[in-house]
Image (cartoon, rainbow over all chains, first blue to last red; front, side, top):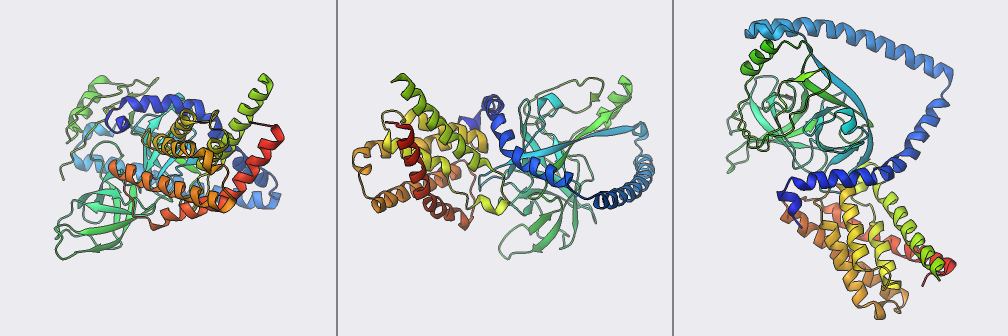
Amino acid sequence: MFGDLHFAFFGTVKSIFIEIIAPLEYTVSWPITSLEELVRNMASKKDLLDENTKLHIQNVLLQAKVQKLVALEQENAELRGLVSAITPTKERFLIAELLAVSTNSVSQEIVLDKGKKDDVYVGQPVLDAHGIMGQVILVSTNTSVVLLVTDAESAIPVQVARNGVRAIAIGAGDGGTLELTGLSETADVKAGDLLVTSGLGSRFPEGYPLGVVVRSERIPGERFLSVIVAPSAHVNQNRQVLLVWPHLVLQQDAREEEKQASLAKPIYTISKNKNKKKLHNHKKINTQIPKTLEVLP
Amino acid sequence: MKFMRANAALVIILSFVLAFIFTILPLPYVANAVRPQWILLVCIYWSMVLPHRFSLMSAWVLGFLLDIFQNNILGTHAFIFTVITYLVVKFQTRINFFPFWQKLSIVFGLILLGQILQVWLNSIANFSSNNIWYWLQTITTILFWPWVMLLLQHWQKKFNIC
């Protein structure tokens, strides 16, 4: 019965069955989405014009910020000495809608309406507008299952934005918080610190916000610091999420790829090599999905 | 005769499809802890009144489907449903003729057994959760038992399933 825990074969079994029952999930979410559509269609013209103006202004402001971001990225790459990394890299995003949530009270997972036919892969990071939401753990043709960051099984390498202290953020399993592990008692982590992904492990792209430290206390008798983190992403409230393909390089120069691959060498041990997929006209650098992750802080 | 059998299968399948729809309906996150276990209730009812038609195999398949929906470890709910259906089918001759309140208490015991088994199996697989509101699910489920029983009894009489 616990073959599922020990063998990866059952992942494919689950994918096959999910394909069969996916129609039911679509039918269940259909009334809700159609009701939302109906309400939207009945919005008054004035409301729509106001919303349009507001979004337009927001768009312009964000584009202005992005311009500065591109310049900062280039300057950052120069300062780090990775001259070859100034070739433009683009992250591909895809918006997915929530189809179902896990009704289990012990696990926090969501089901999205994008699957293998949209090039979703196992291990892909999922974001929302405010931060990291989780990673994809199961892919079927039309749907995929995402493990949220607040689930007890989820572990993400993070660093404190203020001073670069690295740790691993593990979900607390209660649906709303995470804990940091691997911090010694003397680590400098305070309440209010912003945590961003550190990029170690090559699963999550570097620099995305994960959460804010709520409480950081030294419990006498414990050898590690006890830190509670609140996630920035609205993990329990979103209907739309972003799937991101990090590390996509648009230039197809093989030599440049080699250089980047050797410079961005991962610092972990891979125990299983899966899924080296080639997309249509992009080339992924790191598609090795490690089974065990040992991150050296 | 054959028509009646097909009719019966259709009604049972329809009742389970409805139960599944209610189980996977997206509700606010806090509603997960108090969501009644519709599929378990329907399962108990049908194995109580039709033990020769709906028995352990069907219960196993339903539990398996529920595992797929909830992305559990494959087999947790399959096992739980099988155990509960076995108990119902074994004592079916007596339970079916109990008065309403005795049936209710027996079903409550079965639901509680299901919850305990779920916690046990999840903790073997290291998915432990210290959520005290998890046990509220037993009470919510048993609250809906009379309605499920009445509705399915009505369907059973209407479509003459035996």
